[in-house]
Image 1 (cartoon, rainbow over the protein chains, first blue to last red):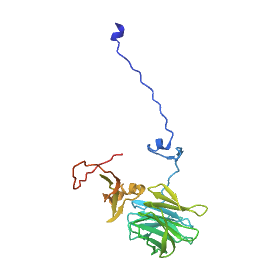
Image 2: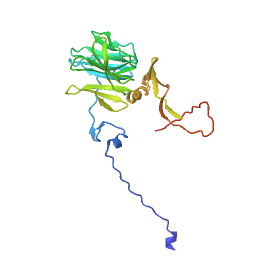
Image 3: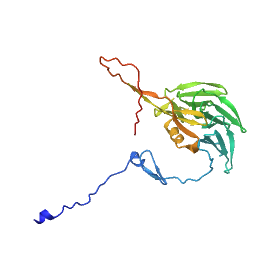
Image 4: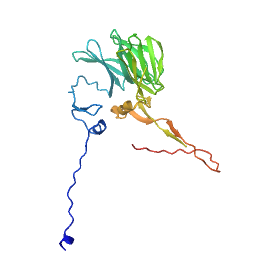
Length: 203
Length: 70
């Protein structure tokens, strides 16, 4: 009889789970913490505002030998310079709304690539001259090789151009991808190209 | 039957930025001060499959929109 009138009681269960991988942690919200690609959580570097462009996007930054910074921004095609003391000014405004890429040649002269349907401009003493027009929708990246030529990564045809001098460019490598978004040279002087939609390729 | 994907296209100061890489699209889609307005342009074919119509004769075409939620 006692058994029939006693309500059933359930204890709270204990659930355990482990979060160990990049895929686990990347779903979280990060506050002063960095997540490495192999799933390690680290204390994030301290952030300090150097300069506010008041532009919607900063697409590219390069550092000159004198430690000044050049910033490429969108969507008004503006390039800024911040000198080593933190003093900043508007260096140049492109005809196109986006400046996705910057590069410095061996003499410290700045090159800026604009989009869409943009060009590469050589900017010296605040004045810009057209350097190369790849006739591509996008120019995503610029890099100078040890041969002194400028390499230009483009979309939406996924071509890399080699430009040894002003106005003289030719297709260096047709990747078959849609976009080539980054360029870099390794220690052996090989050109590395990051592609989209396929993750990575070398040329 | 063909399945087409409508790649996102963005308009910035009356300039079209069609089908950018995902990382760029992410920045452009955040509004960016109201100057980047997402729009959609003609899509790219993802798949095509033949469906037998049996003895029937089918003419014309019909387009439907399918929303895929990830």
